[in-house]
Image 1: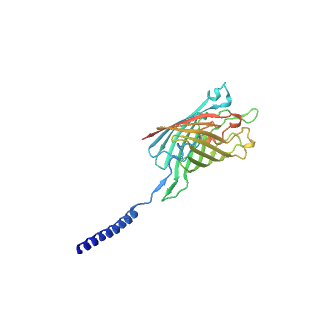
Image 2: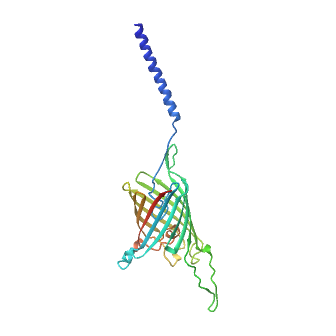
Image 3: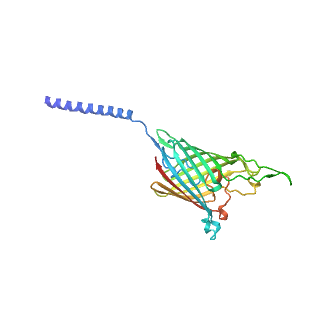
Length: 304
């Protein structure tokens, strides 16, 4: 009887000590485990929604080679093969200098523009230990129009002229843009893009050097590799009614198709330009009169 009592007491002691030890281990593990931060990924498939920048950036030491085309307007009809007889092209190299800084250089055939940009990641959408409802980036760029200067002398009177003086600074356009995006769920993302554009030289005094615009972009994911995108830029231009040339807000719709290391973007847009200094303030075609351009972007990413 005594032996049974000793055995019972020993088992009870082991169970009690094991339970206490287990509680101590659980407490220790809980103290050692750090809270996790879950960051939103693939808010958009590429660094562009359609024409404009998205909050997506190249990772460190990744290089994106991009080719963009915009054809003529569909209202050219059969004679112009619905715009396919004419096209503008843009090439660019965009590099992830760090995980928070992306830089790029490019050249387009429209007005023979050279451009460069830098995009800084300011905030990243996250849940968990760090709650951040949106992602935010700052994009700044400069564009240089390399068309030949007009050297025609300026007519002062019927009989006198003066040589025309041209400055390199007259070729410059500058853009600053804040990109604010949220991935609401696995399928839907939305971006708001307040934009400021400064142009050094304008054709007339009625043309404003400074332009403000509000961009809106959205992506809806259909499958793992296919999504539908839409983009619209509302331009604030108080003197537009006095200008001889009619300008329209840029509106675009397209699809993204990912195939391995490539991302194909196919779109319909009323903008012929492919950089902010042209497609935001200088869109002269309208969807309502058939001024729609078929276009595409091809993105190929290399890891260096």
